[in-house]
Length: 266
Image 1 (cartoon, rainbow, N blue to C red):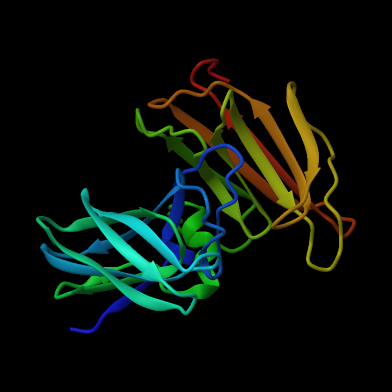
Image 2 (tube, rainbow, N blue to C red; image 1 turned 180 degrees about the vertical axis):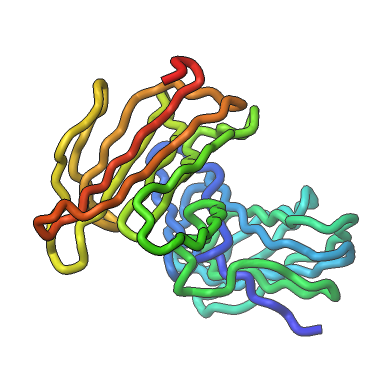
């Protein structure tokens, strides 16, 4: 059996951090780990039950010795670290009784990854180019083959009861230049419609909007125009969306979106 390296850069999250803590997860893994109350968690999935042996690939950045507590699926281990040279420190072996995700939590050093040895197949993020997306949140996308010369796209969305977790975004109609859908925010809920600026530098501008719709430009991963409607949509209800994309006859493209609610039947 050869050890697999589960990089924290793509598979870990800071799951507990007190105010003012400076810990971060970057392309090298966990860094600036100096607060004894900060806990990070890394995850990998075992395809079948079996034993798994875990080590931590770590080094000390600001001290010569450190005691680290590592918990694997509820079993706690204490690991003694020494020196500033990166190396693999053995943690321990646990028996995983059923297929599924194994959680590894710990504190107190700079960690680049986990060394995982087991007879079962493992599933984890191992593409450095996509670590940002794998840590950003779970995401599922469905693709559709559009008929030629299509102008309208219609879709419906029903979020199952109990699955409307804060921070979730449910994209109902995504396309090469934008998206529309519904979002769960901290204190309210939105219906979103966004169109990005064109790659050739052409800017997106608002033509018209419905009652109660707020529009603003945005930046970040892309630039463009975003419109949103604050609407308290309900999990379990089915909402209907239409997206229309057509040329305006003057060299530009018009993007429009409509949202149908069962609450108002409009």
